[in-house]
Amino acid sequence: MSLEGKLALVTGSGRGIGRATALKLASEGADIIVNFFRHREAAEKTAKDIEALGVKAEVIRANIGDPAKIDDMFNTIATKFGHLDILINNAASGVGRPIMDIDAKAWDWTMDINAKAALLCSQRAAKLMEGRGGKIISVSSLGSFLVLPTYTIVGVSKAALEALTRYLAIEFAPKNICVNTVAASAVETEALKFYIKEGLIKDSRQATPAGRMVLPEDVANVIAFLCSEEAFMIRGQTIIVDGGTSVGLSALIGGGTD
Ligand SMILES: NC(=O)c1ccc[n+]([C@@H]2O[C@H](COP(=O)([O-])OP(=O)(O)OC[C@H]3O[C@@H](n4cnc5c(N)ncnc54)[C@H](OP(=O)(O)O)[C@@H]3O)[C@@H](O)[C@H]2O)c1
Image 1 (tube, rainbow, N blue to C red):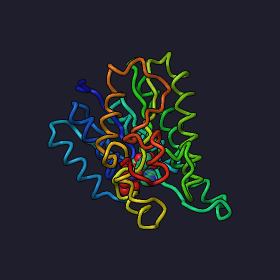
Image 2 (cartoon, protein in one colour; image 1 turned 90 degrees about the vertical axis):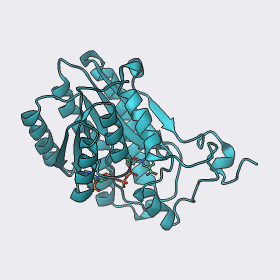
Image 3 (cartoon, rainbow, N blue to C red; image 1 turned 30 degrees about the vertical axis):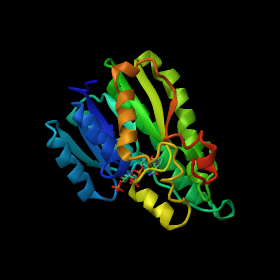
Image 4 (cartoon, helix red, strand yellow; image 1 turned 120 degrees about the vertical axis):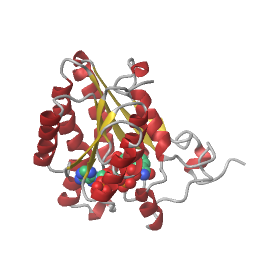
């Protein structure tokens, strides 16, 4: 697999899965645009680590929950580079609440960042991919089809993201753009530490059939594969990276395998 000469935008790539994905794509030869919102230092560290791999990195601040900021980000990319080959819709946020405590503001905040931004970024990316084709990969979670405590809005936003993936895959196929999603179970990141601390998720190390938790790099590896020409015939799919959690009943009910 080589992504040499490709230009990739990874939203939310200062930390976590986004950072791991940016580094993986860079290690395959792609130049990377590192998007961040609140943590500039982390984004600049990611950019530095990318450059150490011998490719170029550009850092762009944009709150992808704000359509005007998405436009600003893509205007900058259009002016500076004039094209884009890969878009990774990774950045996400969310309000964790029981259903009766969900209000319109929490719903809109979560849906804007996790679902609407993927549509708006994909539309702008498709224009920059015109005449050269491209890859659009989004990052989802098992909460799109499994029910997790207080995860309602995020789960619904991820279900929307996966449905959007299918529609984009068909409508963008004539533009030679491959669209897919990677859905992970609990991944060892800052976000997960928050969920474990709040008691919303158990430490699922022993309950994962593969024997360890999913790492950001596990997700990044599958994203990178979907960005390669080897994955050309995979379209509109949600590929699950969970070490077997979603098909192992013992994992779901919290038991081990022995
Ligand atoms: N961790 C898990 O267990 C898990 C499991 C399944 C799926 N996922 C999915 O994987 C993706 C990455 O999650 P993660 O765990 O790596 O998250 P994380 O460590 O919490 O990082 C979130 C990233 O998103 C960025 N971000 C948040 N809101 C943003 C906004 N409005 N505009 C631009 N960037 C924004 C953050 O940037 P700043 O820091 O600069 O604000 C940060 O880089 C998400 O789509 C998440 O739903 C995670």
